[in-house]
Length: 509
Image (tube, rainbow, N blue to C red; front, side, top):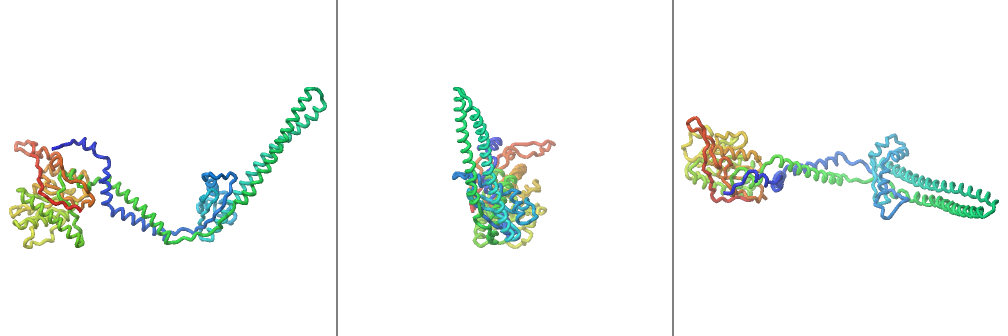
């Protein structure tokens, strides 16, 4: 027998089992499908109850003095940012004659650069006419502001060039006066000085001419830029379809609801820590999974599904009947989260054992699971816990109980000294499965196997234990403390019980 320590298993275990997480989230598909459907309905309802306001569009061609073919869109993004300013909003309101605050108008419009030189302005209003008027006012205000900035930039550049030219002209005038004063002198030094002054005058004259030409050119391109900046697509209302808007909002709500539902399901799965794979359930309970069944529905299922379920239940009843016949000890069925299915399995097992003699079902299930059954010929006799001892000698007994929270553990041995656990996948947490295994080991009740109810149809993990007995850790090596009659309590070694499970056909859906 291969054993492993707790520290080794803990170190080898991943922080989050992705396979178990995916299976658990898939099992909660009703939840996240419901959230997706709710998001779809909310999105469609918002589109109907709060339709989008009337909207108008206008397109403006914007010419820039520093346009470059390889511009990455910096200039048009600057124009979009300038559009969202209180100055342009205020001028637009002034042209409309409105007393609205510019900050309020800025919330109702926006701009986007379609290309490096085309700006699209989107404006909303209380009506289509108001939206179109706002769009026209904003476009005119933006064009006027852009033209003003171009002209101011050209004027500032020309003024700087002209100021430089005037300064050079003053220097030239000073040089001319110096030349006039030096022409009256004679001698080698005077001649050299005059030559230097004439050279300076020629250079200053050339620079003055250059600055004059540059000042004239600074204003030459401005009219072209001003003429190019204009409205190219007149303001027009945007025709909105209620059906299209509702479909778009519903699709957005569907996606958001689905994402939210999946996130909540994943987080809830990790926090709850409820095993769903047969591998994890068998490992936590310390017993193999011997069969799988669908959950017994509250209402009758379809014909084909009922036939498959009945066939699986018949195979399970045959398997358990072989186990019960081959055991001299009483066998019980203990449920965890599936009392209805456990009751149906108990009735099937009692029917399979009915040919050999009377069968008494000791009912300790929560709720009146067998209350409506009469004492008809061929059917098992149902007795309560208080009548179990009185009817002990009347045929074979089959105990049916529960290991759900609140169970009286000391009463489980009265139902049977060996047991079959009927566990619903994803119902019990890891800690509670450990508690069940520990308590059954303390009561010295070996677990024959686990019947898994409502398993995941895509679960391909192995529910067979290959290393160790099917009981909890303390039940492997020692018995519970017992009174020796001398007032002392002792703990003695116990023989490892390995329940041999007859050949059983596990239903894999």
